[in-house]
Every structure is written in structure tokens, then in C-alpha cells.
Length: 120
Image (cartoon, rainbow, N blue to C red; front, side, top):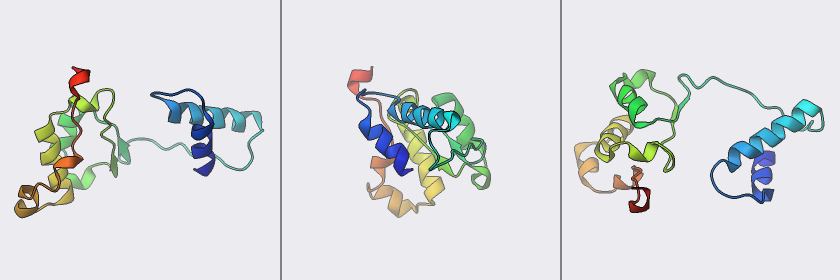
């Protein structure tokens, strides 16, 4: 993980995808045999991690919470920012098992991702 972070920090390009570019760089070094300090472990996304879009988020919300992914990455870029804010609030409240009092407190409204005016 530290190697990957350092690679990201040394990249001169900016913008989306630097983390993936750094991962590809490390992968290529491993494949060439020049990187011997680490190994990359590939795991299937299923039941571990999801990067929802508005379409896949609807399916996720309908799933039983006992089978939901361990990590749900709702990014403020690409498609996830178009997921309905109220749907995000409802789902996150269920996942976190927030009480009605906690939901009404206003403390948890910052967890949702919203499209910025510049995105529209």
C-alpha cells in the first residue's frame, strides 16, 4: 500500500485515474521482475466492493443488507454523483442502522454525494 501511495505522489499527471495509473505501473514492474517488495492480489468485486451507478444503486438498495458488499464506494465523480440524494440517505441510514432521532439530527446529511452545479 505504501509503495502504491508513493507512486501516486510522484506522478506528474493530475486528474482522474492517477490511482489506477499508479497501480498499473506497479503491476508492470512486478510482471517485468523489477518489483520484488510486494505482490498484487486480485479479488473479485462480488460481495466485497461495489462502485454503484444510478442503475446499479437501485439493485443494491433492494438487496438484503446481510448480502450487501463490505465496501460501497460512492464517488463524487463519474456516474455515482447522479444517484438520488434521498435514496443515498435512506440506504446509508439502513446500513448504519441509524435511529429516527439520529436521522433527524442533521449530523449524517454530509455522507451523500451530490452533483455540483458545474456538473450539470
